[in-house]
Image 1: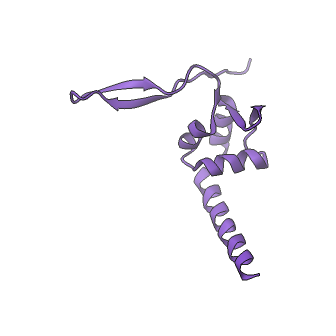
Image 2: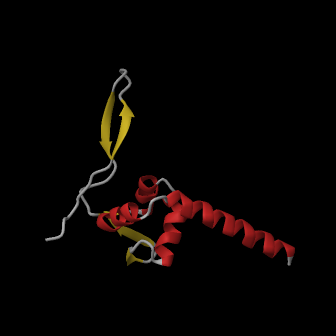
Image 3: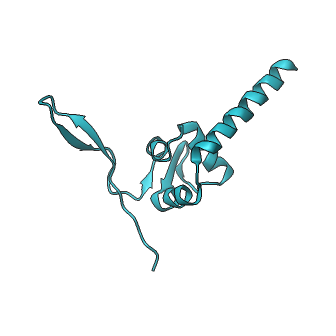
Length: 105
């Protein structure tokens, strides 16, 4: 049987008395938004959108304008990809090149 994962992401918040408390950012849902997936991969939101667009990360589209990334899919991508930031750097260079080519036209 395949493993199933559930995760809750917490934000560490100062309590004003020199300590911290953990505030839940997500629920026990098995799907993550792009905003939550980006910091897990250490990339920008735009990179996560591109990864979903090219099919590197299989995403679900429950309604127009909403993307949900299954936690299992995000973990699969993270373990199979040695350096997600490398993709982001490559795409940045490609976008810079495309922009320069358009301006030169």
